[in-house]
Length: 249
Image (cartoon, rainbow, N blue to C red; front, side, top):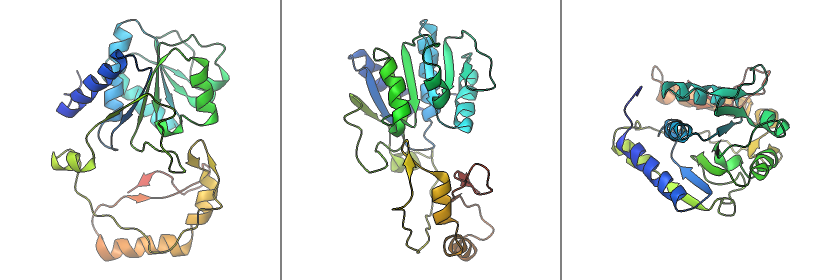
């Protein structure tokens, strides 16, 4: 094994397997960012593959697909990629970009397992199309935010929820760092920002957030409170632009 699973990760794996053993076909697993969701479902994928099951893991961003594939290899689980630029193969474990998989459903063998990263997207059109194509597959959906963009829950989509430790528990156990949180005081109107698949449209969001009132306030706060220390800023970008929708230091 490349690393030792933490005690709570072992417990989460046992709880997920118990839920599936009870006959729940769609299980939602919730764990905060930094808790190791990818490690947990990579380990579970290895167990499923060892039993001869076909597993497809869905991702909606390149960097997420890369992270998942890397974790699988660290656990000794060979995996293919269903996305442009990668050759097709018959490996039982595949990491798939959602849009690519949706366009190839007629050519992909039916999996026994589907694992959905960022499960709050699973109610959206393309994701829902994939789940509907394989209604008998066991589905494990993982997320840190078990709600839709509009704030509604996911109880009408999933049969059972497994809750891992929350942020405070992970901090108390030393697995997450203590933090101080700062936010701009400016009011931001997101009413005109479109959403697709549970995510804000990046270009719309960037148009609203990339203003002197917002970014200038962030810089001022950093200089006032954190100068010379590490900070993480959540920003917005278009794919061709210089702004980032991912956390940036």
